[in-house]
Image (cartoon, helix red, strand yellow):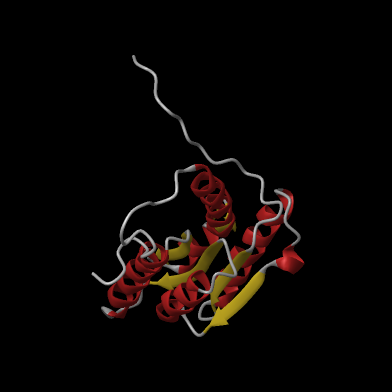
Length: 172
């Protein structure tokens, strides 16, 4: 096997500027996700008091606020937490899919990590298992991903050449 350059982020959040966007709908699930995210940031060197938290009405609204924060130049990453729980109508499919696609688009359009800690579950029990229960805390995992991605992007070469100032995916 030949040699290669290896880049890998670490979990040191000291000095990072992070924000969380939290969906208020199903806040009995979202609040533990937010708590898990803030605890992970604290454990890895960031004072939770320095983290901006923006509450939005629900998961569908998360991408717009995430993109605004990511594009502001004032944060290094945005952590998104929320919960979409399947009901008896197709509403779940629209909200869950658009939230996921919007969060992805926010990251690609801005070049800033926007992590996905939005649960999409069949019922409340599954959601609670993933909000600090036996399946862990997906808010915590989203926060750890944000820390690692910020550090990784800091290590990677900066874009160069014509149009490099435009974030990946912008204007397409």
